[in-house]
Image (cartoon, rainbow, N blue to C red; front, side, top):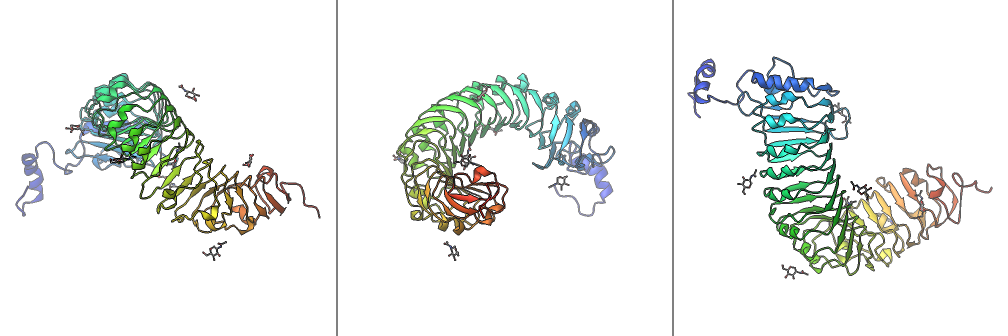
Length: 482
Ligand SMILES: *[C@@H]1O[C@H](CO)[C@@H](O)[C@H](O)[C@H]1NC(C)=O
Ligand SMILES: *[C@@H]1O[C@H](CO)[C@@H](O)[C@H](O)[C@H]1NC(C)=O
Ligand SMILES: *[C@@H]1O[C@H](CO)[C@@H](O)[C@H](O)[C@H]1NC(C)=O
Ligand SMILES: *[C@@H]1O[C@H](CO)[C@@H](O)[C@H](O)[C@H]1NC(C)=O
Ligand SMILES: *[C@@H]1O[C@H](CO)[C@@H](O)[C@H](O)[C@H]1NC(C)=O
Ligand SMILES: *[C@@H]1O[C@H](CO)[C@@H](O)[C@H](O)[C@H]1NC(C)=O
Ligand SMILES: *[C@@H]1O[C@H](CO)[C@@H](O)[C@H](O)[C@H]1NC(C)=O
């Protein structure tokens, strides 16, 4: 719109606005609509404690469109309410419930109440009276009780996140009516029962997150029409049965699949190798068995692969990845023999966990292309010989090194303890020498069952940390002989 440039602003406000924007004009109005002000002040009165003063600007008679967390994109009407605490900061919180007066905010399209920690009470039924509502993110609060059975009445919703609350009971089957949903996040609640079959009607879903609940039964075969899904997390539930075949329909787009900590069984299906966009696959802590499909070699984009704590057997396919970032194959029934070449050559790896993987090699023969980014290395319960001294001299930011139950033979005093190192487990090896003072910087240490000798430096660790060595002495072990 072009206005004559010399138009006096008073005239502009008095006459031009009603002509050119009879219903709405950006933020020129002095105060927000009286209903919205009443609704917001009602919300505020439902808050009993606001230790960080999040709602301090919410004062009757002031411009409510300028209050913290309030957005008006439709003239004087409030269109979004967005209050977020800082995660892990208890001061940055709100205590109270979501007042029913929220129902006065008739133009609200987005409600974002995130990380407020002590916001409790039941699901706010006032949402059912907000005709324009599209986005609901009530995350990491303490709401409880059931998710209302008529949740499906919110048919316009494009995103629903209730993650990180204490909602209990089943996922209502009416959720199937929310056909415009692109995101459904219900993780971290106390939900029980099965995944409603009707979820197959949510064809616009890109994200389905149901992790950390008590959901059970088989994962239903409902994915064939959900070809927009990019991220599925079902970890930490009680799901049983096999990976459903219809997941294969997601091969072109799925980037993230997490099914860890369930009771899933059967073979890892061949079709997973067709997931060319997959960058994270976590199937750990289940009962998967058999060999990995050869097609896994085609997972060229995979960055994070966690298959640990299953019953998988050899052979492990050679992957054609440009680089893996984190890999955990621990506690299966693999006999890898050596650390795989596609791991060794990765230029970006930061976490490598190959505990009890049947590795029989001399550690010096492992020549990783990159060691700079490593924060965790776990090679426990293998038959690795030699010394980690050179390796630990190249890992400047290592946080944890776990190598218990191997045949490592080296002088503990020749290890470089980088500042970042917090966890060191060398128990049940052939480590000799004295225990150096530098262990004081660690928060976890185990050097039991080695051939260490001599007086211990002063230490906070218990006797079991040092048990079963040749001739260690001094507190917490018995006194050294004079
Ligand atoms: C926690 O939040 C409060 C209030 O917003 C702030 O004053 C304080 O600096 C924060 N603390 C930390 C450690 O960030
Ligand atoms: C859902 O998908 C349909 C068909 O692709 C599309 O027209 C519609 O805009 C989508 N809705 C949302 C909220 O993305
Ligand atoms: C889920 O499984 C765990 C461990 O197997 C069990 O303790 C718990 O009772 C189960 N919960 C439900 C709701 O089945
Ligand atoms: C990898 O993909 C190619 C092309 O899609 C296919 O021809 C080949 O058989 C696949 N390899 C395996 C081991 O499945
Ligand atoms: C699997 O491994 C990845 C990368 O190391 C890690 O981030 C993830 O937490 C692991 N999953 C479980 C269930 O521990
Ligand atoms: C550790 O690295 C430094 C320099 O990077 C080198 O001088 C030293 O000899 C190395 N120590 C061992 C035991 O490899
Ligand atoms: C140290 O390791 C031994 C053997 O691996 C184990 O039995 C013991 O519980 C561990 N002690 C500590 C303090 O972690």
